[in-house]
Structures are given as structure tokens and as C-alpha cells.
Image (tube, rainbow, N blue to C red):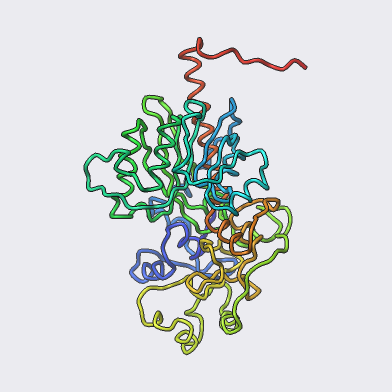
Length: 424
């Protein structure tokens, strides 16, 4: 454990703004000090014990080593995109049996990088999953967040018709995997005042699955140099006895420097690649923004010119005219790096991150090629689940399945053929 944490690190871990931390400083909730090495504002680790969600910082990291799969565990993935979740699951030890995606360029990306994967480019509502019944261990999918007409009564599968979650649940019902894993934006927790998520839980319950408490995982805690958060929804087949634990957060946080330079995450600097550029006036304005800064670091007259009516509205709007610092994780990547509301300017050069820099921040390997025009490539990367986050979730799924089969073999040895070993 570190002795001191920077204001940026604490803001990221608590999912609050730096302005909120400064307000807490003023009212005495926190007491910042000057870091003894760099003299920057920092918080002693002991002062952070008041936050229950940071308890992992003060416990011994007795993390179990990743387990090798005890058998060939299989996965079917819906809404696969460019493969962030699938690649992480493969890295954990799963064998992909089918990936469904409707976006043409994303499918080309999947096929180019994994020619042996069974990639189905089709509207998911047109797919029949019954041939996979009883043959698949895990069904995954990053279904979009769509409203349900749910007001507290028991919601069944048919009530979810017309939503893409319905197609995910239908696939689970037809395949009957041991585990179903859904992932979504953090906003699903509060969508329709929580009714949408409650409806999803109700549907999975109706088709025979017990839903673990949904959990928002911060990518920065799983070897991803990005402040992205994703909601994970894990459901296990009822009466299977399967136990699943979400991955424990890692204490070490990685920065943009770790993503783009040779070091802890990658053995070499990021490869050169194409990327978008800013219009002339926008570039002139962003030249004035320091690393880690945003529109409030501009002269007042420039602030008004750039922000227009937004200048007079409330809220920090900290993503606007934002230049990322080398020493912090990136803000969540979007599908368009030059968009006014969500600038992600390079720490030194006044430009958006390139395609390969985008991929590094999402922890894709350098040999994972993205197909299509530049805009389509940015979209695929911006929509992806970070590979390292998916890997850590996949490791826990492997652990759960290993334990399940170990218990099943002890309880019902007659159902399982003896393991055979190759003779040297």
C-alpha cells in the first residue's frame, strides 16, 4: 500500500470529481497534505479509511493465482462488437463457439483476427440458439440499455419483447448455460429509477437463473489505464450450486504513460497509426490547455468563445477541452475522439489519440487489427469492453466452473468418464 494518494487517484477510486474532494477538504471531511517527494497535493492513506469502498487498500492482497481450466469451457457471445470481451474471455481460457454481431466492420475485425471463430453477422432476433442447448458453459452479451414497462410486479420473458435484452434472455433460455453474463453501462443501475435492471433480474429469475448482486466494476482496478466503469450482471443456473465472486480490485493503477510507453503494460511503445485531427481554431484553443487541464484552464474570453451557452450553465463539464495527463488514467474513451463534448487530447501533442493509442488504452494487443474506415475503427474500440477487465472477470468464471465440476465429480462420479492422460 502506498503512503500517499494524489487527488486524481482518490477522485478516480471514489468516482467523484476533484471539485468534490476540494469541498470535502473545506468542510473537514478530508485533510490534504503536501507529498514529501514531489510537494503535490496528496492524501495520506490513513485518511482514506473512512471510505468503505476503499477497504481493499488496507487489506493484504491475498489474491489467488489464475486457474487453468479443468476442461474445455465454452462461450457464446451476443453483441460481440470488435471482440474486447471475447478476447478477455479467450485469454482466461474459454473457447468461443459463436459470436453474434450486426455491425459489418466489427464482424470483419473479428474474422480477420480470429479466422476460426464462428462469427454470425445477423440480426440476433433471427438466430435460433436451440442447437447449442446443453453444450455451452457461459452465454455473454453487452446488450444495450432499453426501458421496460416494469412497475414492481413479476416480469416475465414475454414482457421484455422488443428489447435486445429479450434476445439475450431468449438465448440463455434456449442454450441453458451454467452461467449467463451480461454487461452494460453504469447508468443501467439508475435507468428508469432502477426499474429496468429490476425487470432484467425478474426475467432471468423466471427462466430459471439466480442473479448475483449486480456490480459496477471500475476498469482502473483491473490493469486498464482508463476511468471506464461497466455494470456486470451474473446469473447462475438455479440449483446448480455454482458460486461466483466478482474479481477483487487490484491496488495498482495504470496511467496513459503505461498505455503508450514501454513499461508495465506493454513491452514496446505504441505503434504509429492514423488518427483524427482537430480543426484549426480548436487546435489553437487546445494548445492553451495544460496536461490534466480542461476548459476552465483557458482565459475567460476563450472559455466563453469555446463553451458558448454552456459557459453559463451549471456543472463542471470536465470532459470538454480536456487534455489528458501522462500520469493519470484516460477518461472513458468515446466513439469519436474529436467530439466537442468529450475531447481526449494527447498529453503532449495537440491532437486526439490515434487508433492504436485508443486500442492500447482499451488494452487490446498491438496485433489486433481493426477493419473499416477510421471512424468505424474508433467506434469499435470506443464501444468495447476493455480486454484486461474482461480477462479478470473471465478468470473468476473459470474458477467458479472448476469448483462446480470438482463438486459434481465427487457427488456423481458415475456421470463422468475417467480422465485420460497422454503417454510420453
